[in-house]
Length: 139
Image (cartoon, one colour):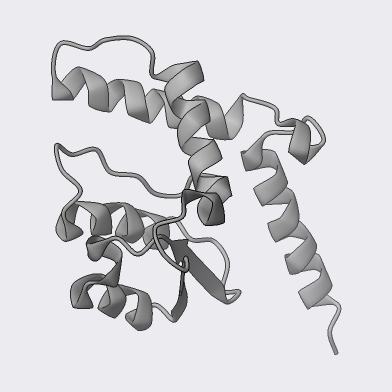
């Protein structure tokens, strides 16, 4: 499930961190998290690493600039671009609306074969319910 995103004209640290901050704000689990990324300067920066550390998120980076080591993120980006973001927009405001709508559709309406034809949102909610139920049975 896409938990955070940010649209900007560049990939500087502050803009990329907006997506991370949104994901943290939308977080519904207290389970340990691992943040996997490539070795882009924005992810290696002290600012970005401080946000991860503050939120107890363990960073994990590829061995180099190998996109195949980040296959899940690359796949999600491909789906968004190929299935949802194929309209040309006139400005950033329109593109922002299109991105927001596309992520909503990706999370809530698009079934995934790898998720047994369920949506990411449904699988995410189901996993949270299972954790909640199993946690309530602990004596």
